[in-house]
Length: 120
Image (cartoon, rainbow, N blue to C red):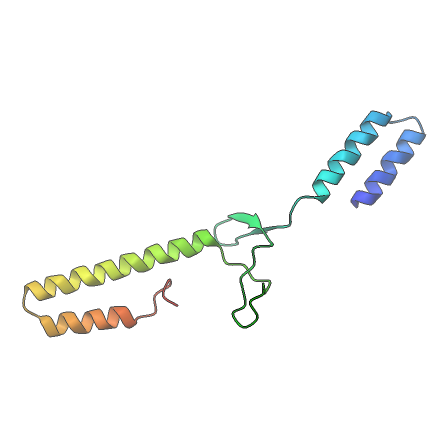
């Protein structure tokens, strides 16, 4: 049942004496408030919900493109990428302590060039 149909039904019930006017007015106020609520977008990955007007920006046009990127999932990806790079740096430092400079350099270059989840 649409909001308009609900309003019409309440008016008919009031005219028939089944619903007092104050109830009809209260329902109409609630329906108006519901109609003013923003459209929400819910992340399918984590369930975080926010106003759907916050769309990703198309770099070519500078306008919203209708897609959404979850800021929480994005933060988790950045944290994972930082952990991966910290581990690579720690491993390289251990190799350098053992005077394996070439291997340390190679491993760091590979780690920095690797496309991790947060490095795309």
